[in-house]
Length: 306
Image (cartoon, rainbow, N blue to C red; front, side, top):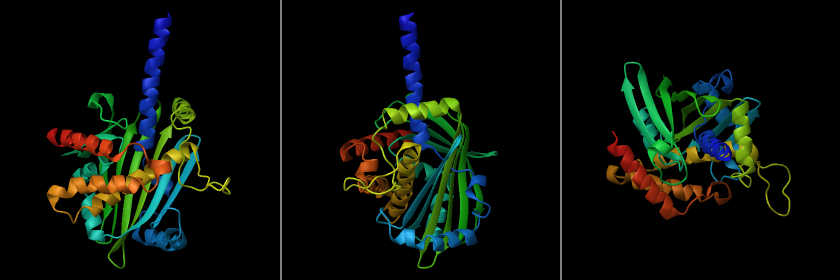
């Protein structure tokens, strides 16, 4: 009897770890939840103007703004960023599902990504797992439908969606929209969300009480104490850390486009890791050698599986 209980407990703990990783890494946005007019170039430019002060003066040391919202059954995050790349380059990069895989693999928890297209549309098969190299069968599998909602010479809106996740989570969505800004720059908006039920809420609470008990996000919470800045924790901290990781992956991918094709992958890896180390309290997980070795092996596996 004891052995049976022990086996069930170990099985539940493995599922809990998978859920927590997925909640951290594969979050994306309800289009409806983003507001009535966020799907237009005009409204995104208006948001850029409204965020002028926050973009120029913040703790990120770059033109970036992060927001997050928690409700009883949904978690959503938003990131707005001005990037120093022409809109045409950004549009070309993220209107191709295979380019999304080359970007997503930079994230420390993404173990695999493969894009395919059929008469029904484009699909991304993504595996999410631990912060170290692991067999693919041990990583959680997601199938994301890829959709281009709008694309024009000055604005695009694309998204990924997966209906289900582990332990009572559902309706995972990723949305990226971008608009051209004068001076050959681009203003990005990433929204992400997922729904969760009672089991999912319990799993996240267990994760926050154990593995993530000392983790924080980027939003400053109240007045600084003991000479240190206090940052938000909890599920909003989880969302904000991964919002930053995904933004840095997008930026690292774009930053390597001017490098010769054979050198772009290594350049993206170096860019992503160096950028995360600017925020060690929130984002440091492994050293450079461990990250680079893991990602080279994962990228090789991803390429040879095509």
